Length: 308
Image 1: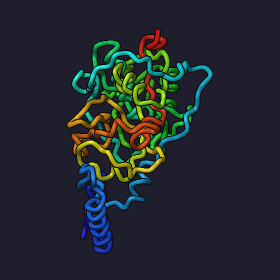
Image 2: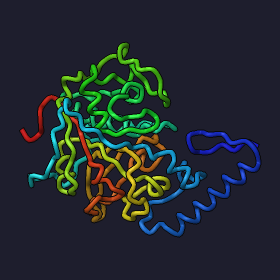
Image 3: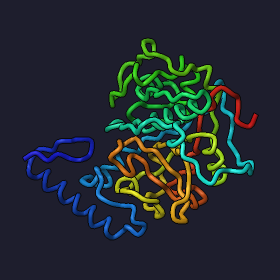
Image 4: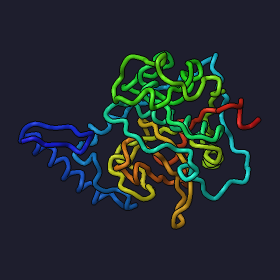
């Protein structure tokens, strides 16, 4: 008997494995039924995975390394400017289609590319898709480890000292680490256009203000909440405190009196709300699932700082 997991298309052999996966699935159904106060959990592609297996796939963020030679522009702090009630960079044309990282622990690369694509579109007026595979293969000197994990700030540093960001079409995603091919790709954004990067202060207002200027790379604890996310605004916090997954904040808004962050994931369009999750934006401190504590960050395109 072959048991095909919904998770990344794995195929399991034998009746014993079939029984094991069915038992895990049933246990997860029972857990959801008992822990679904906010109504956001439901059957997902990860239903046949034990939580430990799921966690092992996504504990892939590494400590940031601040370089003395790459322009780190410090923390973005709230200035109390008047903000729109809602912003959605998907509707504004600054977000590429949802992608799928597969079984490679490259969430950090997708988050980096997402904020780079969005900020470049806002600065230059056209949306290009850049290469996550370039980061997986070529970003080896700033603390990033390909499919074994990385961090968005490290990747911004790499991009600024490289030739620039390769286009997705010329350097497509393969889902595993390989040989760096930057010398043969088409550069869609020159390194000189990436003038620095900023972290965002751990504050709801600062996050909203940063998002009003463009998408922001964020780190979250994806355990449990992301595993079973089906739709709606996540308002419970089963996900713990360990940041393990890089994603992209693309806006904020209010739905039926609940404020939320809109976040793009990299697990394909069949997960969550067409590849997105909405998270409670009223939770201060570290934020829902740690979304404010990474810290959030983004690259500057074509100018030294948004404060200038």
